[in-house]
Length: 340
Length: 160
Image (cartoon, each protein chain N blue to C red):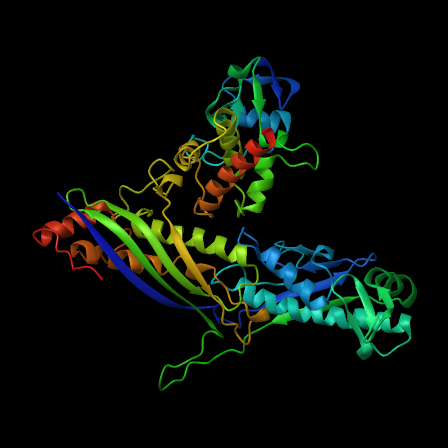
């Protein structure tokens, strides 16, 4: 028996969102009477950071501290409409909707402040710390809280805004089949190093190196977290996880965690990530989405690395020891494809 | 069905209630006592999110008969913080982004607490071993391992 080292490469252009029916997201923003802002969404935070990122986007657009913005999500009975959290669309679609809603609320806030200061709204600016002042005259100012109180109790106005982001529907060209299904792409390239045991067919990943282009990393720590965790989900799908191991035959499928294989803490290997930032024009503050595409390129990279190690080309996932071993036997032994 | 009286301390507080024969500790804590911090994951001892400490040892509360904790000391994530003062593990998990969806976090925290109580200076391998019964879908484990190692470093610093 021998252990064979293999290296596999894969890259991906990942479409952000999918333009079926315009892929709309709505956001509503309103102030409370004490000058805090509430962002209402039906977008769902499953732990990927939707609440944190939309909170940052709203605060930046409104010109108020992040601490003064709250985000309420995920009640489709009462919230504004959203298509959901999928296809890496959250940051891009929901973020754009939040920018529009927050910009409208900011305009209302500036008008209310202008009334109080008896100036033109165009002459006002925010300092990002909870104050609104006359440009060039920081002494002439009013707090956001006092502005909200005046709007609520004196002017009889709401400081609120509505936002929707909708992609124009792209029809399919009858002659060429061409269409424009998405508005922007994220990109990634990954290199997986692994070892294959030619006696057992077992595959052990040893290292991952990757570069992800995500537009702008709006929250760099959360982007890194998403990339590390998502890459492991990709490796896991490549090597371990399935509900139908002999698909389309449904036999031998797992019915609990004892028989559904998932990586544990001991399976983790070093993953070196380079996050590349090329802000996208139509994305909120340039941020696209590192959602699904953090997992996807790992699958072909693992398959390529196994081919490189022992010359077995598996086209059904997951690539179990059984499939590797059958491939090695069919080839009359391991056929390493050389180092690179 | 006959009920059995059970007394134990939960996060330092005397707790007494009647449980059905065969009731598990997880159900008893969540439904009987109202401590929702240990989570129900698989219900068969394979995911680890229901992990609680019994006399300092990590146990899967979904597989523990409630009657067996008579007179013993139970710790859950609900007792980790002191009001707004987070336990060092909770704070460092937060600083290291050691959670995404958060469902595995209560089990991870309790497994880590048991480890650090016994071994204040664990190696990376020992941390991995301590949380090997806890499944995490989101993080890829890396930030959780880093958080436990960082907490160990900080807690040692405070004692010294």
